[in-house]
Image 1 (cartoon, rainbow, N blue to C red):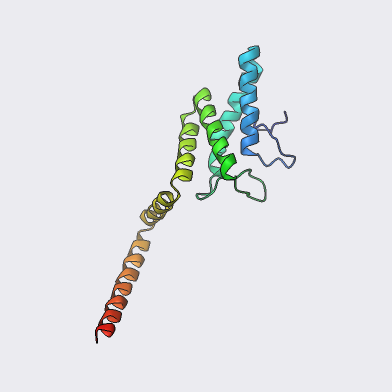
Image 2: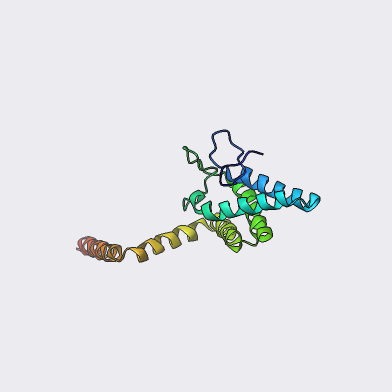
Length: 156
């Protein structure tokens, strides 16, 4: 299986690092090591897991998980994402990289709770930008004054 110079199993001809395909390759190396005991397969799997741990954030675009890191930034389909998060959790467990298992659980939660995820993302963005709170409060106060004026006009 071809690999990138950093050790990620490459399954696309353009070298864009398909997530599910690379995970398949990594798990294949892990299985080959378990069956043969050949340390080369173990080392390849561990090197790929390290690459993934370092680069997993590049696949995450908040509302979507990318299929690959190529020039098109295609989102992963819901079915493939379900499969990929399962693979990712297994890789996290067998490689001892808890951060990968945590990412898998986070992505699974997002799929199961899209509204809660979007609200959480919005609130976190507000916490990062205190000036946004001021603008939001001012907008809400203005909106409340418009509602009051509208009600007063209707009551007249």
